[in-house]
Length: 189
Image (cartoon, rainbow, N blue to C red; front, side, top):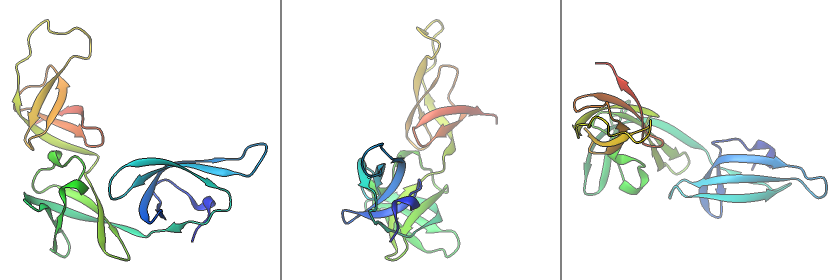
């Protein structure tokens, strides 16, 4: 059991018989009435973010989670297959648990968050930035810019479609932000 003073970003708690991670929180002490905490909670199973307010003095149950590095192997009809780099144990994760799965390429390292007591996987987190090669890009036309931030869609080696600036061509390697699927920079070969 923990109190509201123990809240911090990333803390996993049990709430409404489900596991949530605290995305953000704000302690509020109004001039009149008891203090409370406004939170944004992310459901670890569905990924849905909800708002909730905890009144002062509320006790919460914290959940112990472990983040373990795994290597992505392949996808089959049951989901995605990963291998623990230390124990060589393989695990299959359902497709709904992997956010931005189309950005993964074979051999890349991801972190799988496990519920420590039950040993059940909760989420699969890609690294914040990954490098991918452009496999298909339409040639850009001169004078096709209505604004300074003209973008075009390209296909990367993992099969995902990313919006990039017009100067990016087929064969280039780009760095992609996996959190919002945005182009970050072109990587020198």
